[in-house]
Length: 414
Image (cartoon, rainbow, N blue to C red; front, side, top):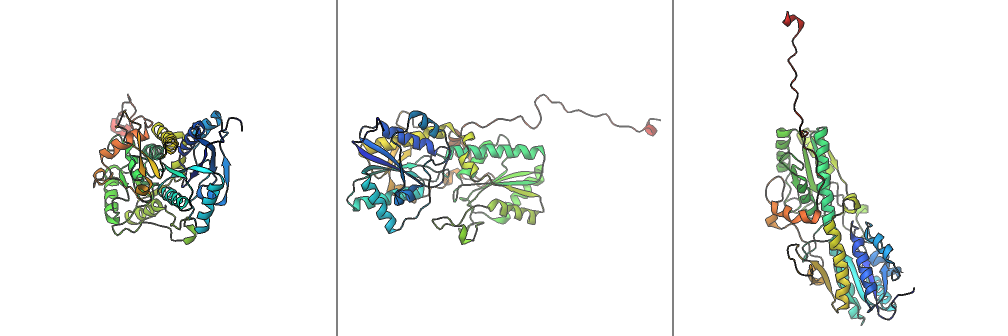
């Protein structure tokens, strides 16, 4: 591979968790920056995340050209492949040995809470084995639940998808009114995505009309009463619910109990609460109700990618490599609020402060109203999601209602 630096320490990239619309923008940024750094030798990628690192399944990315990196940047998903892998002792030993054999001095983990925990553990195992490997975390999750960072790459695009889809769903129901449709969002045990649906609301009659998030305990009677009142007033309603809704005792409103459907981390499969609640509405309120669940489409839609999200993704990838080369380790690149102009746009935070820590919607951004979130929440999300498509109002501009003359029978005329 002509032009590849083989004198410096090598760099390994590990992706973890679910893909996003902009995760590969981070990956392309890491690769490009690593190739440009004189102190970095070869650039390796573990196939299917920590699982590939354990099995010794890697690819050499050192020769990637600018055109290929640009195409990668625009591609959704996780190009290296990802996994939710719970390593055993032997797996950990193999990971360390593979890093040693490949002469890896720099290690980049890209992912969410679990991945940041994995980065911390692998870094510690390397130190215990006498192997010097600087480790850096690159944040990624549509859930927006990573601690210590203003936002996570992946969230802005998913939030835009939810907001636009809610607006579109409202247009559908206004066109052919039916009583209730429930839209279920991803997000696991936080409501950042469900709350983003409110961005699509221009006036009181617009969707959504009711939003339910895990941060506010769910009560059947309260939900049914609020929905019944909305339908009584305007004849139809769009409800947005987060997949991880919980009751006051912490129990999920709905969860698949089949052990065969658990993920590799032995977590129960989440999702399906929308359909569950649609059944409740039909049964208790005697209203026709259907549920919609875009699911994975909502986190992978390149068509609705947010420009800010894409820029954030590139920034954290580039910053991670620069920090490693500068001597930093056991840190994650955390984004600063957009209002803090004039600086680099990020800071480094300890992996130990991030790993396994979940960030819900702040209490001050929640209220007791039907939409769950405040205007402060919307002010935070709007620049992250970007612009939504605008539509004509229900009454077409310039349209004038036609008043038909009264019809009088021939008998009445005579």
